[in-house]
Length: 146
Image (cartoon, rainbow, N blue to C red; front, top):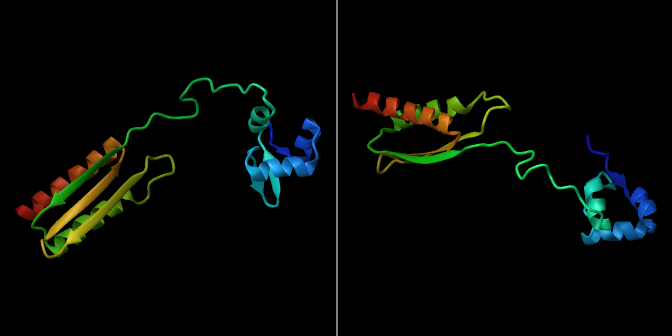
């Protein structure tokens, strides 16, 4: 577990500087800090980097990251009525609702051109989720043609 961040007073005491000097370094951007309310907090890593102490590199380049794949696609549906477009759009949007916080992001955008009777659907999400939505689009457009 990492050490809690330092206050400006603690940093001033550690470095033998005046509190106003430390605040000036923070405001100038020379010392990175987080503002919480009216006070600054300086993480230990930032203080070490500022003071010229070696900062331990992360264990690996991907430390703290999780492998994730994202797919995006645009689907164009021609000769679709307003009613069918509404039904398809509602189905796709409903499939994105109720996702848990642990689930991958899933985004659906629809654009309908009434003059051309053309619907464009933009899907962005995990490959599995995107494939499932593409399957739904395929099923719904086949039903319209039958």
